[in-house]
Length: 494
Image (tube, rainbow, N blue to C red; front, side, top):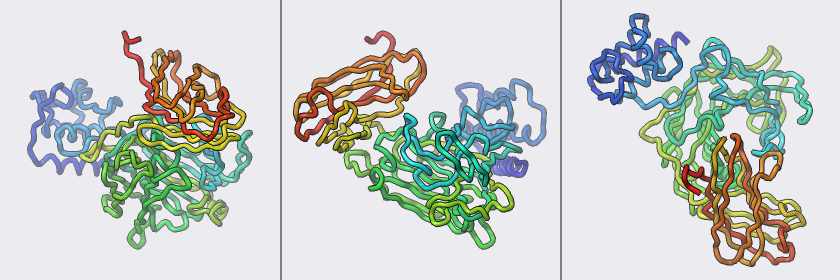
């Protein structure tokens, strides 16, 4: 940590040899009280960090850009960015203190991949992984986050018994970004079946389930071949019709993932670039969405959140593409160490694309149906409704509702044959907080309702197209649902 801190200050000193003057609208950064936040102020802050100890309380508060009550290299970086000498740091974790910052990270637990309502999708996180993720396999110490993979028996009442434990952390619902530079300094122990990963998933899967809404892998490593890593993007369509682009980085002779390295991706609307220690090794430009109505930058035109994990086994490096290797753990637990995570707004950063209609996913039980999101609407083809009202559904999962807020939910809908559609708003326990029946015709009609959220919660909006009314007797038909919006009602609006 001390070496990294000193290096950051030394690098910053090189920026102080030029000139520049940025007029400050407020007093933040104006340490010499000349009315400007400029390189002279940055030099004062650098000297203070190197041991000057001469700052007044007012100067210290003025220089505390990160608002954590301390002065460090992050504050210097932010001041330099005000002076136009660097990209703007918008989020970071330096892993100071002695515990994980719960305002920035959440633990993702278990071995099962679940949907937003907690329902089982598949085991092994969809990759045949053998570990059970816990909230006790990660620790913060001496400025380092350590994720520990262990060969130990772990039994969960619901998910069963496992031979390995580890940790998986994410910033979902706490931080996400669209474009810019995402940078992580890390190292990892080697050994067959270890799978360290630094990666990103969409905050909201607006274009459909994995991988239609995309995945960005900043770094993935093979424990059996620590002399290389890879950077990858997944995109195209929903599995199994998805695809990917990837490139490997091979370390110089004698080097590997066991040593400290900085892994980064720089991401614009047209291009992604992968780096190891600022060495560019991969550039990708050819991604696309199977939905041709979406922007050319889709699916990587939305906010993505960060994930850090150390898997054991699985298709990436598991024994026979499945199992963990006990020999890897013969001398004890294995570590994935992270020094920092930093996200910068750069010239490549951009605002997420707006979508004309929130996309839906298909749920079918005892029925025969297809679903296609087309940008401005979702088309559900119903061939057989089954016997349940929810036998066919277009789902919008996990929508965020803030406490003490009134929302308006609106959409348009039509059907190639007249029929009824049941619309419900439900929590993860399937409690219906709203329901209404819509009479659909061949012409698009507008529908809306208001909902008062008493508490902060995430709810599922369900367009039920199974055996609702006399729909079970209908021939094959197509239902279009479009321009879905969930918006807070401003004060004074009805």
